[in-house]
Length: 384
Image (tube, rainbow, N blue to C red; front, side, top):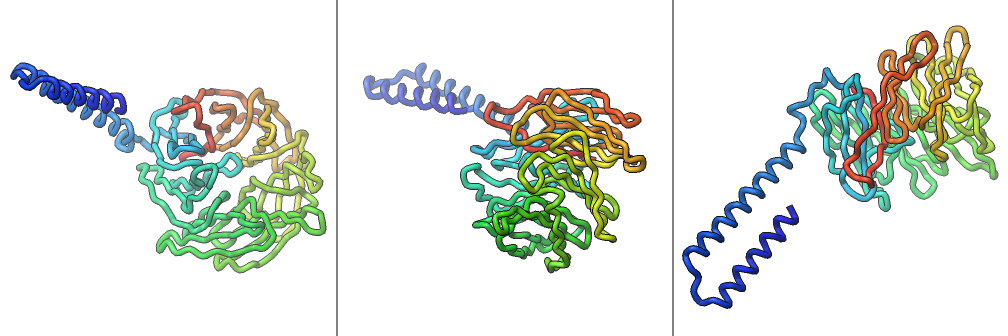
């Protein structure tokens, strides 16, 4: 488009020079210039039309065919995109999104009742966006919820509310946005870094870390839907700085990638919400990260997000307590389970593994073609 505009300006300058140098312009020359402008106009129209066609893909979107979505984003441009893949890992659609820093590799996107929720933080140098993006995964309609807080990271969703958290000047905020009327209220937690939120229909579980008397301590803060603190549970002995946790029935399961001394850890902890008791799973490998449940198996990814080296997957049998570690030849930045398949985002690729009788087998992989070299991948999620 820019080249066409330059060409148009150059031709206009030539016409002006010709008029200046010649006092009489022939009829033939006039007809020639009219033809040039007409041709350029048609060219511009075609380019604009094609560009718009390329951006609007919702009419070609078939929700039934889609299995996995991947978020591509950029910290310096509002040039993000969600790519959609079928079971064979063929890209079948994409959704352009005019936001910068859409999502975060430390915080998985949330899918709740066929809706995707993700935080656009804005430009990397400012992180000044104050909203949550909602995408209807059945028709790709988008909606924004305004939350007047900077640098939000973790998010959780239930039927009525969207919850986010952020930390400013050493204090953290848990923000609640009502889906129906979009009213927002916030709870300030002094001198705490909240790293992860998990919620059900009645409670919010916030993982927080603080520095107390030169010692790092970690807690689970339990809030009700009125943001009233119900309990504060010390989990320092299991680990610190928690970014990954899931709810499964009456249990809260979380990974402990680092211990209280900031050293690599190999524990996953199961917290009974009813009895307030803890059960630890000691694994054969450090840096447990993402978690998922398939039948009677707890699936655990292993990856050091700071080093970005090779990763692996542990499969833990919740009944027999047996577990096995599978070393992988690639990164495991994020993991998502769908039916009997494990989908892994790593090294700008998607990997599809089949779970079969306590083992995993690589079924498929695809290299993700990004829009430009400055873009990166910030998340993966299952559409269904």
